Image (cartoon, rainbow, N blue to C red):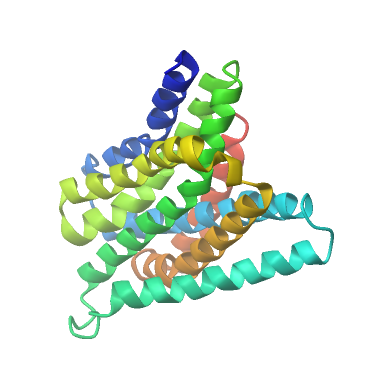
Length: 255
């Protein structure tokens, strides 16, 4: 096992588990109010929309265009988006099939938002983990600043996951658990992808996965997170927080 491989594992793991920093910011906060929860969920709306529209979809389009010319690349992109939408509906059905029996208990709904977001973020990290691991392994000169940038990017993801789970259940360990498990997807997918799937991890496969992930993230944002943000924060707070979330993603890119 060479030094580059060990360094890649350490840096990708550090970057992935930075979600726990975001979680700690939530559970250590003394001011636990539902108005604050609404603001955090609004922030999540802006962050997730910006990640999808500014990062994932353009990258997917670029990767698919490198394999197929227009309009085939666009057709594959659109089909992938519909596949993501279909998977979202299935995921939604699986996670909410007890809602009617539980009379739509608001704590249950909040917990479902957190768990659904955790699963979505984990899916987002599958192709991301492989790409990041390969990038760090290939060029150790950029490894540390690159990993640091990824880590900072993942801190708000930990907040997005933990806030609804913590507010819904009051269970700090559960909030940290889901956040930590989501973060671990990054190094695990990176290591497995690097060792076993690197030859078939083509631009086509990555482009399709990114498009599917974008669709799922958009569905979760509009179906789950945004309604809860409006419920607890109100329209003004939610819109303001969403704009801040978008600005935050742009600021991260300056680092």
